[in-house]
Length: 409
Image 1 (tube, helix red, strand yellow):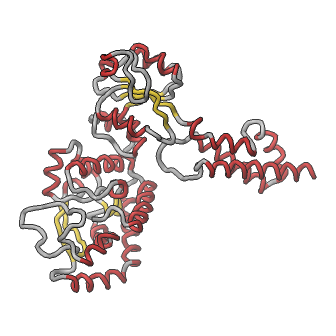
Image 2 (cartoon, rainbow, N blue to C red):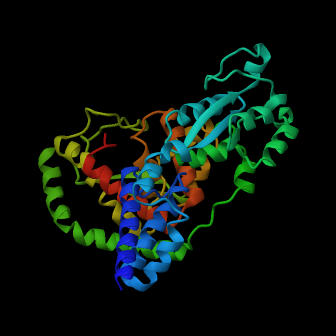
Image 3 (cartoon, rainbow, N blue to C red):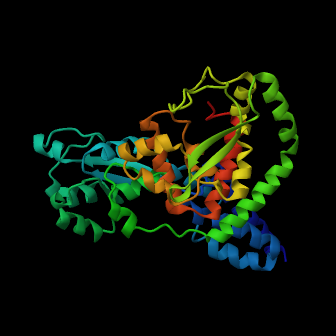
């Protein structure tokens, strides 16, 4: 009996030490997306061992004997997890040049889950073998790619070359048989930054890659209606107070109506609490709102800060014009221009626009074509991965964004 009690105590201490170690290394931080997956089994072992010990002291004896030989315990566990960032970071070699390659190299600097070990590209190779690249490694011939990757302990090779005919296929094949992952740059960038890069993007990426396993439209519609009704119920006091404040702040109507483009290019009238002065735009001349826009009224500035000027859009959701979560609905005047200047922009109309969305919580309010292109990368990511789970994450991030008052204009 004493041995069982001692074993029970050991397992509890073993599991607790792993949980403590995990907390020290930030393993307990929940991440819906991204890498760092190798930390999960270690955390699962900690939770599992502790739970078993609490449920059955008799099972604890077997658990302890089995686990203590296969996993680090006590101070060893803490030491192992404290070294987690250094030991478990995937070593990445970037192959190729161009803007996307440079963006990936920059994103890998100091990344918690990946370590950049080299950047090989044609420009370096064409000059001299003594050229030092971005990762402070000597640029060497692509013909020695296998040697370089094995020598530097590479786990993953990210290919950014847009012209695939120049790829060292035999060397890449040899690396695959060394157990390395060879990955397309667009796919790697998507997982790294949770957005889809427009550089190097081709229609085949959407055609042949995964994603687009959307929830049924009826289910998403049902969730939208339920959430919109609940939100209207909770915000009834605001619907009583804000119209009074809007009328007192400036002349004009309480609600602002504007034409927007929705699902499959269908036009609809969006509703907002009016936050600008009357005649803020010249007839027929659409302009983006700016940060510290002088056209915004005093109460309008407050409403925009907390985004409560968009509460009437709940009526758009109930009417079926919008969803609770989706790309931001844009004006027809901007849609035409952006569809010409930004590739794949029209595909954001494949789903209903939303009151909030992945782009809204990940990027500031935009007022340029460049900002629209950046936000499109997040919109395409959302459309590809649209799910109830992602919608829930966006809702939580929206609450945090509103409370922190970021992204308003």
